[in-house]
Image (tube, rainbow, N blue to C red; front, side, top):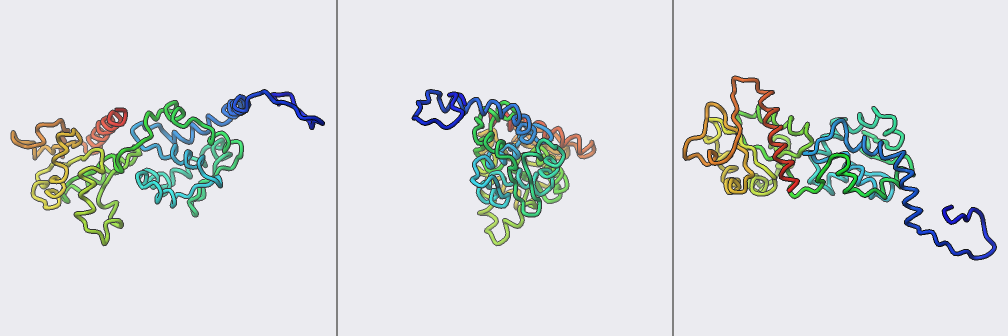
Length: 291
């Protein structure tokens, strides 16, 4: 059309219009229809720059698929570093709810909760996402970094007596779409494994930060000693975040007293304090990712 060839010709004609020029015009036209829908899907209910951008990654994997479909089960096998965030949005119903709540998104994407298949419904939308400049698009919609150097963002270390608080903290981290190691959430993976071999790399290198709940119970527990022996060298790397309980404030020679941490008071509002802890930790994570 750009070369004004609108019907069959009896003789060979030379086309001087650049293919990339025409392709760019098509893409710009499609952007007006589809950029808003792609943005709404990738941002989810709220942009969380510190999170693992599960919706953004799902759309990117869709763009790379040959049959316009991605399987959540296959994604979990191929991209284990995204396991936590993908399970969070898929198995808890957030992915289906997001698509069903927006007619503009549901007109181009379909998700089957039974088969766990996410599918593109519109061929023009498929063309659009396949030709996106993904790094630029990610930054434009609020995600400064979509590369992850560690399987986990945070690993929790705590005594069994503080499990209720640890579980609340884990849930709040998950709401921010971060990937957190919390032992009870991974019991099925630990089964039949050598537990020490399984946990050692998580606390040594596989989490960007270790968050330690330092109550009076912590130093008395064998597993806490094992975990702390594996992350103690990371104090020098500024990747251990101590949470000091009011009944167990650090002493002068306590290793944790040399680094910045957060105080926690059992008698105060636990939910508010955990919200503050998560907010500070996520700001730290976002800063770490931007370096």
